[in-house]
Length: 137
Image (cartoon, rainbow, N blue to C red; front, side, top):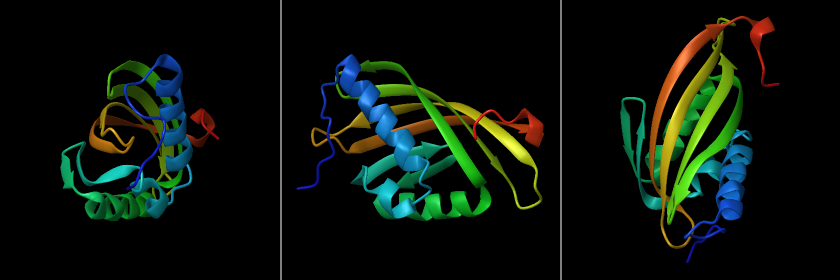
């Protein structure tokens, strides 16, 4: 059986570990690695897109990182309880024309008992920035 510690119910320490592990994984921009943190039947809402299952998540991440170039992410724990964690995040990226963006948002996560994320709901807003306004390098 797949598992990904730390496991719920979360403490402040283990919730922070889970958030840091997610940030580290997403910053690899490796869809195969990242999608393995989710249950096979994971449910996502990312902006206005609804995904079901690890295969759809992997395909989404491949598209995402083909369009969001030089992606760099920072996540911060906002709240946690039992098997749920909420994070605030910001990430920077540019499109193929060279326009930079900072994307801000919130994510609500729910975990299975084996530590894999079974639900992820993300709300995200994009702000065009100049290269000199970048904070995350």
